Length: 386
Image (tube, rainbow, N blue to C red):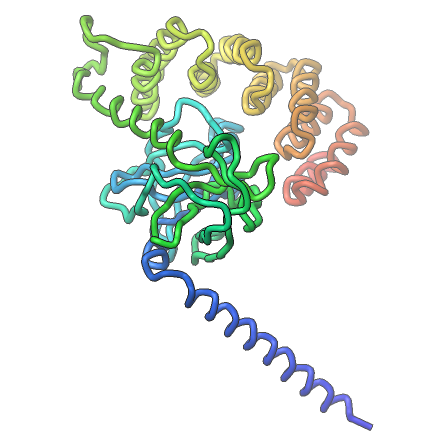
């Protein structure tokens, strides 16, 4: 009979051989990927959202569109950033290189994608082909950078062309975290972006995304028309709501909150449906302690679009600060109904219940949260029982 030690050795050898086989298999797959794609791995990034203490909140995929630092990523990154005023975005490239966040480029999220700007220049960028029309059955490659430490490359094919050529369905699975990863053709050109949508394994082609980028590049000329001392729009300049929104962002990034408030108000006067202006204005009021004003603005935002989770979470937090726990509970409940898997909504709802004196309801939120976000659930539990 074979001894236990011999069986352990054989098991170890078997595991080693399996691992070696998987390594060789991976090497063969990578060998089929054109060098022109492999060489662009450094342009694929991970966009992290951290809280004010530097603790990780969320990470999403992305890639650099141009050397000026324009990056495409998924909308959930921005939603998590907006979830708390203190949250911060940082961008991590292959090998751990860090780029600071500069600006939010897109005026809104579309197809689960948004454009942001890194505060850096001369970045490695992908090669783009926005006019490329893929064919059914064509080979494609997706490059992902899930942790920032190294890129993962997957091959697949185009299965279906959807929505008059604006979307394609592929054979490569897409997760929420991988939404924002670049899709290459076999010529080494990025032709689309992977997105997490109702249609499985979907990618959005570049044409609509590049229109957003072109609009942003046109708006970049705004600072040249703005006095460096006052940063006010010239009286005779032809302006629109996006000009004032961009100006508000500039003021906000410079911590000039009162000027930012006026710019966002002007943007909303020109376009009462500008959701980002509502959210940014609400955040500024929150930052400077004008909670009543923050509440009013965020309520207006939700009247425009009642499905914006960050607005509910910020509004509920403002209610908590004002001691209006019943209003906070109602607000966070609505957020949890919109997205039952949103950990921020359940955590905040648990806090609101606890502060209102309803520990039993708070503990129910802990039970729900531990299946969604165990780390936050443990924090909520500690608050409840201590």
